[in-house]
Image 1 (cartoon, rainbow, N blue to C red):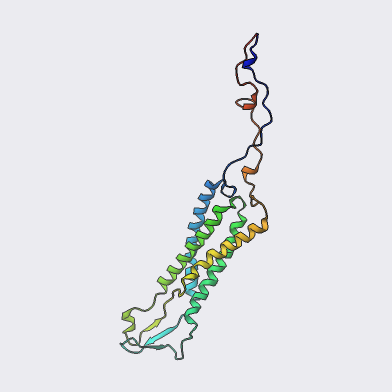
Image 2: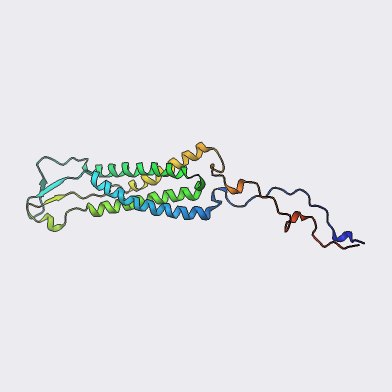
Length: 220
């Protein structure tokens, strides 16, 4: 005779399984690894931008006319007062253009869309801005004291940023493009097909809560 106390009926309907956590941070472990790689790649790209800035930025050549450091424009004439602002202008155009491109490319990586990618793009563009600035400033440094006291020596104005706020242009452009694309997407999962939004797989016939019996059956 079987004991009814040791048997249970089939379980009732269960609510669909949901994955906890912030939707934009699901799968963030892989996203973080990809984000670190993005930051490193953009930091290296910033070196190339720094060389391009050094080549395109307007600079003036002078000839030292006395041991006291007096100089005059090589070839005569006057220095354009907008010369030093032009250095910042070229830098802003280069980093702003790179930021727009990076934001667009980052959005096309569908499987990595989310908060982590957005932060990595901003951090990567900041790294690119810093490396471009420092490389350009080092390679385009101004004349030394010895140069300015050597009569007849030709010197070139230094390359540097006059407004440090220019460093924010690249990150701002990348974030702006990414956020605009997010708004236009109009989907909570950003179109990435987050596994958390997919239905849970059906349980197997063994080792499953839906197997029916939770206790041993007692033979009659």
